[in-house]
Image 1 (cartoon, rainbow, N blue to C red):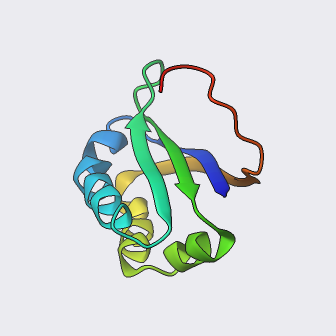
Image 2 (image 1 turned 60 degrees about the horizontal axis):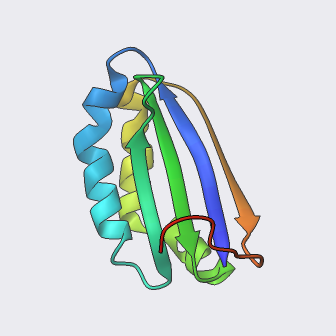
Image 3 (image 1 turned 90 degrees about the vertical axis):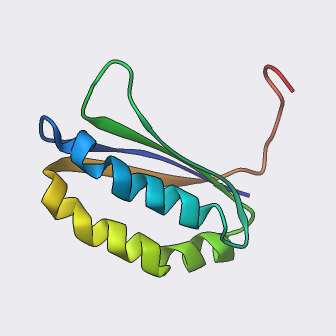
Length: 102
């Protein structure tokens, strides 16, 4: 299992411009083979920060996503939304323990 965590920081108002494109990306990505979870969400404390949280069945599934046309379309549109920075990292998810809920 591969866990991806990251963020995209937009110029003021940029996240609002990106919402529709981000929603389209999420909907398409959740249909991909090997996608366990894929979430983009606005940070509650920083209004123009988009949080990224993904879980993939395998490295191969994550790599297939990296070449998906809907991801390329979103990445190409980022320049129109005033991106000021981004940071996305992948981690091995071999260890798993339920902490809360079920």
